[in-house]
Image (cartoon, rainbow, N blue to C red; front, side):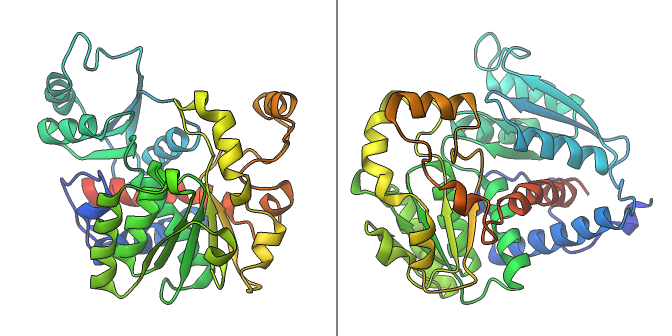
Length: 337
């Protein structure tokens, strides 16, 4: 397939994808549309190996299911070669600086996906590698997740206009922050509903509100779940305890039980077509070792979402998970094509 056959929705050649606020509303909308087209190509069995003979590195300091699988399959579908490097394969920041690592790997690869801790790490890679760097998750941002979230919402409602998304739970984490900023850029109303101690930082809220003012949407920070879900088109939640915060587990259970997405809360939206999203993994039953341990220790079998809602017709979590592949593919292609 010739490079001239690449979809021409967007050309971000050579750019990195680090956080949502680096991109315009038009950019994000075009990436979503490009992902929808690439998804259709895959479903139709059409080859789209636009990046033959390109080499991509996956640097994963944090373990992953969806992000690693999505980047791997996306790169393979596009015809690129993939090399996976975990924290044991690199001297990242230990015996070799991140800058030096970027200068080395930038000469060997055509693009790098990074999943790790401090956002400054992925910024340093982008500064010195001289190739596209894609943020697969840092402590602060998760842009490939939010892109898949809004692709899923657009597929379901056929638009992003006049929609309201309500996020319930830990509003400080990377998923909530990315969701809030992406929503504001895309002109979607966003409500972050969390206990006062778990609300997003003021700087990120102000950033989101600046974008919302530009694009005609609203950013609301709330504490009452029933008020927050009224007339919401999307209910979104995430795990109550993020990686590295396990010592706060019991405290989070006490703080967040009222924020569990259950049938009562879903009905409280007052809408029949409200959908449920979750970035996964979700703790909604005792079919995992982790779920069993929690049930035995704390006497709770469902956490941020009930099993009933998770597997209901309202739940779009598996479409959302699949769309990680298609949106990541769009990001890779737009920045390398």
